[in-house]
Image 1 (cartoon, rainbow, N blue to C red):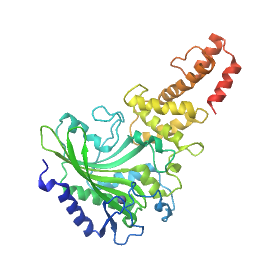
Image 2 (image 1 turned 30 degrees about the vertical axis):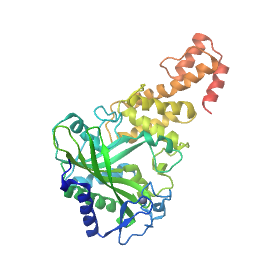
Image 3 (image 1 turned 90 degrees about the horizontal axis):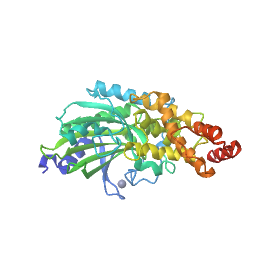
Length: 396
Ligand SMILES: [Zn+2]
């Protein structure tokens, strides 16, 4: 049972008071019916809330005035980390992407730092932390190519506080407003959408009060106040505020495409290819290996896309680029060369299978395409010309 002072209704009243004191005005969205807030001096259209479910795919923020110099994601996260340290938050070490204790195979949000506590009855914590947590969300895979601003992997920059009172949660919300403003994302250009929702993380249903931060039509993150149900102890309050670092980077730099800052300069290819390389590199760096279930299955799915559709591109130059990207946020559990080789073996496994099927040749082993062809030519006397023709086909 939720006590009265913990009810979402009470909290939403407190939020309204808190925001109105900071000159946020309350509105109602005609599309979704949610309450949203905009500054008195708001500069953008507020006829709808601008949350991703209601926006029309416009990106008004791209027309806002631009910075003189672009900022890299790592520079932005360093500035945030510095700000939150000065505000009394400890820096937490991000988790390995392969999630062994929670409900999902891969880490999808920073709040999973509490999985051991929530799911394995470990002692409660009460510190305030800032964490830059690399995450993978597979549900976006099909939209990467068709929509801007989407990637299957991203860095969740977040503050987490277990045991937070609702006032402490709002203090953290205030810190986020300050740090975003300091980075040049002014609150005049934001809409905050408020929603209460029912959630269940496997320990029982609970309600959450969420505030979504949308910057000129782009959702950057959300601030959730949760009361996680536990079977043998009182509910655990958590202030969970997380933003997408790459989205913030796009909002700050206002480059034409979200991927402009997220790909090597000299490779020309589709977003699907860059996204698959990015995510494989992250899985790889965290020690995930190809498998038929769990985290390894996701690795395999991306490798299949790359092997079957993008073998002709600079895959094995792009992979180290992304390895270095993730290594800025999480300590690699494998050397770069080994990581690239493991990805290569899995990607080329699909290439090898295609060669094998096309020419009806002996099956490939766990080997690179070069090694496989070597074996076919020198052991099985396969025709070099036929092999080259199939390779050409694989690279189209
Ligand atoms: Zn709406």
